[in-house]
Amino acid sequence: MTESGEPAGVLDEGYIKFDAEWERGPATPWHKLGTLNRWRRILYDAGLIGALPDGIGFGNISVRDNPPRQFVITGSTTGNVSELRPEHFTRVVDYDFDRNKLWCRGPIIASSESLTHAAFYEAQRTISAVIHVHHAGLWHKYIDRLPTTSKDVTYGTPEMAYEIMGLLRAKDRPAKQLVIMGGHQDGVLAYGQSLGQAASTLLNCCDRMFRPGAQRPPSCGTP
Image (cartoon, rainbow, N blue to C red; front, side, top):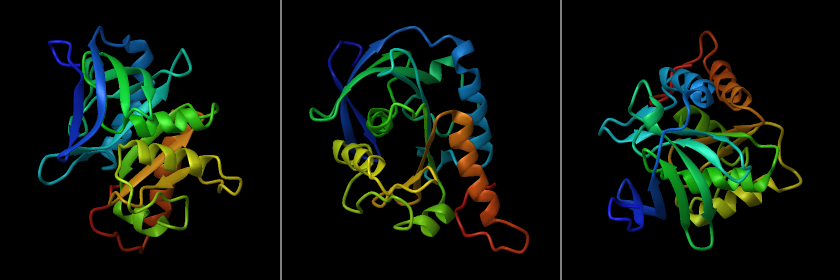
């Protein structure tokens, strides 16, 4: 929502991702953000969250909160901020995939990937954390080997949300809790019952890729 109270579309790399009803409100209490921010800083330092050469930020992180349909997520255009503060987080209070709409409340508008995060929480009640990163090495290694969204589906859209829910509800879903974004170069999503579980999945995969003597692919995050 804009200052005048009108719905605002979230823009990212030139695309409107969803209609956002943004209610300016107080920041989430810091005691609820401490763990979230610590893991986010680890991922930022590893190069999995950050900014592209043109300055556009990438990567976001969220945790489920109460009521269970709500979650706290990093705000729009925060990927290139090294140290987040409470005003960089916001709360998603509701969403509607069919209407391509999301409601959020806090000091900043929600990330353009918020509908994608919502899809994880909608698909499985056991999921409590979702992380979106960029990593060329993981993306190239696991595309079409792990659950991969269609190359024709744009990130941050209702179509992406439905793809995510379909992949997570598949009976033959692998144990590794990663989803590769087929239509989003280098985009990788991790999820888990906790932030530590989701982040460790990413970091452990990076560590295995860059064992001694292995050549580091270009544009990869630092493990």
